[in-house]
Length: 149
Image (cartoon, rainbow, N blue to C red; front, top):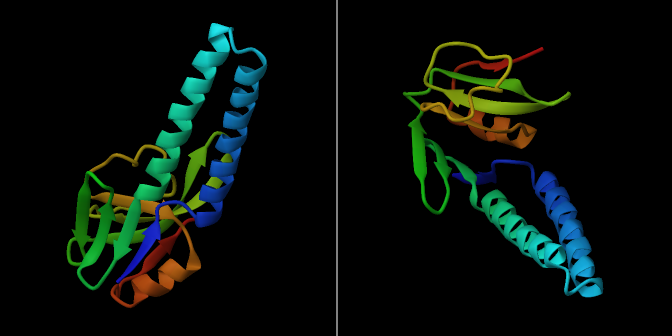
C-alpha cells in the first residue's frame, strides 16, 4: 500500500511559495499602510486563502493497495475496488491553454482524452500522472492502461 498526493509534490511546493509571496506582499502593505481598511482586509483575505489552499493540497491523498484505490481527505473517503474499476487511463486535464497529464480510474467503460468535466463524477478518481504510480498500479491491475495522444 502506498499513499500519494493528488498533485505532484513539486507543484505543491511551487503553489505554497507563490501563495506565501502574495501573503508577504499583503503583510508589507499592511505594515506600510496600517490604517487603510483595504490593507487589513487584503491581509486577512490572503491569510485565509493561503491557509485553506495549503490545507487542501496537503490533505488530499490517493492510496493504492491490494484492495483498490482510495481517495482520502480528513472529512471524506471514497474507494474504488479493483473489480469495480473498468478503465485506467492517462489523459490531459485542460486548464486554460496548458495541458497536464492526469491518471484516472473509472467505473465507466469509456476512454477519455480530456478530463475537464469529470472532476466531480462519482465512480471516478484522478490524480497527477507520475511514472512511479504506474509501477504501483501494475502490481494489482492486470488490464491495459490507456494513454491519450
